[in-house]
Length: 638
Image (cartoon, rainbow, N blue to C red; front, side):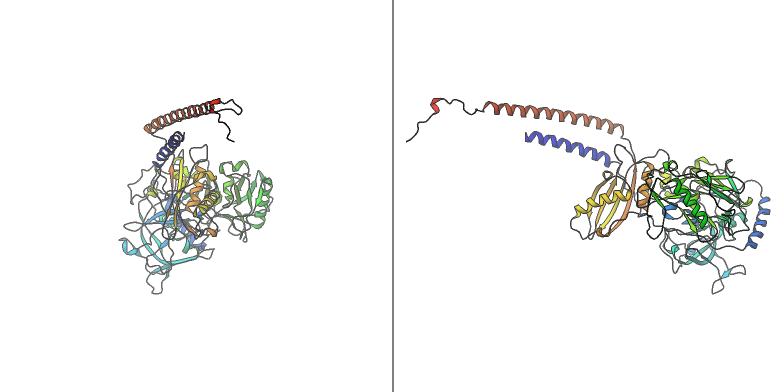
């Protein structure tokens, strides 16, 4: 019997080993360290007289241009709500040096850290080396600029609302826009940064791409030289979806795009004429001009959230609270802020419009822009299925609309016609849905990199944006990540068991989905590999959940108690769902059939052996009180 059960157990082990081998054939080994990020805010204003003269000159020049001008088409990276900004790739110099720059419509200078910087943080890419570029030229001191102490080179200085600042010298070099752009490399003036303070020092992005109004703006420089039309467009991905697209130059706007007038002489920033706001079809009861104070209603891509003047914020907050009174209020993720948060809405972003009310922004011309819940909510980082209001009170009368308001919205800054257009669209699919130009794509101008490829890779590289690689019908089979942990607790088994539960809570998945794959002991720490698998009975992880997991891993948003000692998320990798090849499929069917037959046969044999053993025992059994043959009786000894 023991031998039969041993064979039976061995059969089960063989099945588990073979299935494990089939799964291991699709495990990927491509990893990259996740980024760390911080947000930025508005920059300083320009003189209105200079803007007026520049605007008149630019319009006269543009009217003389014949034919269509090319566009610079760029992908956007990073996630607005997780990182606080979006970045675009820009190449400077000959040979080109690559940089990740924050797209900021509130800044007028494009700058990158210089190799000579005396106080610059560690950013995503290497610092710009002017001496390595054969086309670099310093901008010499002249009456129209501020000069350095030696009166040799022009300088710049920019201070931001959150008290960070950047300063350095001005240089000129070739600027390239990537392989997907029609625009050839062009000479432009940019800042070579020597000192950065505050959030600028700590952010992962290399610098700023200034798209505001001003002579040093990359837009103004390209427009003034006739390289592009006087317009640019931005499209940010939605909640839990990073990336998007940017176009520098004109293109024919879609017929259903909604426009608002933008007055370039009222404010140094891009503004719109917002008249009122409707929540769930009802107009907020506010005095006329509630959104028209000081700079009016300003759009700023460098700001994450939206800010209303106090009475407008109170009215908006009360309207939302009234519409979702059935949801439970909970504290916000940061105790330092009095965020308005709700729980019970579920984790599926696509279902939020069924719970939260729709909002309409009404312009002076009567046109309306519909805002979905993802345009005024952000996901609670510490509670599953919870969301917080992304609109806050502003101490100033200016209404400031950050990137959250225009997620999944194509925004066209038509500067030549003093208007800004809006079109609700899927920004992750923008390249397929909107044709920016009929001109053919140019020959690659910079060396190809994994960040500029259009194709969906077979393995999800951490350097790619989840919004792109998880698009369409692409499914994630499982996700792995490595964690180094240093602990003084000798009971590692107990620690790993508790870690499994905590990781499932932080990633908002079930405990059964988190699996410990491997543990390696190093000198002073343990290297632990974890796997996140689909929840039963699914055979893949949904795109929404996969993006959420990847963003949390990439941005180091797993928070563990101090009792676990020092820990660090090392690398992560996501593997697409793969179907078995034909030979694997047939082999698995044959294996399952063979093992099933073996198990049934062994079970039948085992049952027969047990039955025979019992019959033998019953045959040798003598009941109590049975007669005994006399020959077995012995006389009693006295």
